[in-house]
Image (cartoon, rainbow, N blue to C red):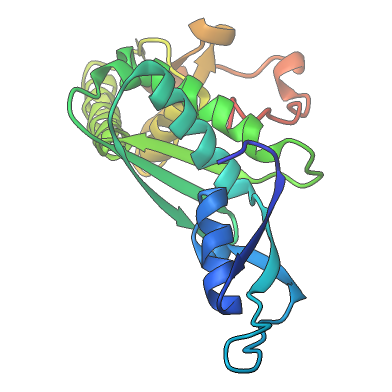
Amino acid sequence: MQNNTLTESVQSAKTVALAVEAGAGALGVAAEKVTYTVLQEPTKGFLGIGAADAVVRVIYEATPADKASNFIKTILSGMGIPADLSVTEDEEGVYVSVAGDDMGLLIGRHGEVLDALQYLATLAANKGRKDYFRVTVDVQGYREKRREALKQLARRIAEKAVKYDRSFALEPMSAYERRIIHYEVQGIKGVSTYSVGADDERKVIICPDNKMKKPSPKEKQPQKQQSPREQ
């Protein structure tokens, strides 16, 4: 299929429906994803003489979800990685799940490669849009497994912070993973969290409430709007 946002194909067949199916097939998409214009209605002729096929112009306009999934398919194809994609779309965005064998290369250390893939797919989906379309990419259920592991880590370190009355620094994490830690600790009495560091070195500190760091005037300023990668 072409990578343009808008593609079209002119096809002929004995019926309009068959011509539309042929056009959708030529564009590499399902028939329900296209629109069409009938350029010529089919005619039966007289005793078979003068019969003419239907001619239609079939148009496919890629949605943001299509752009994201097509981008991922292109990346996988370029890397020579066979995989199956499952796409679930709702009002807020699209969830693309990738499944296959030996998917570790697509995940990377602590999901770094996966995060980069999601970031680039988000850029592809939002190209030319004014409003933000959220794209979530997962591989072999990694994100759910990682989320649960981070929640368990947050609870375990929070218990240690209260027991030993001291603060603990976690390893540097993405903004998404830090939010999981912050949210999980919110429900634990006597313990709080804050973040330190910048960019790839930013990490969460879990501490007893009496050792909670007071934010500096700079930290109290409204945060800038997050980019798709930070979200």
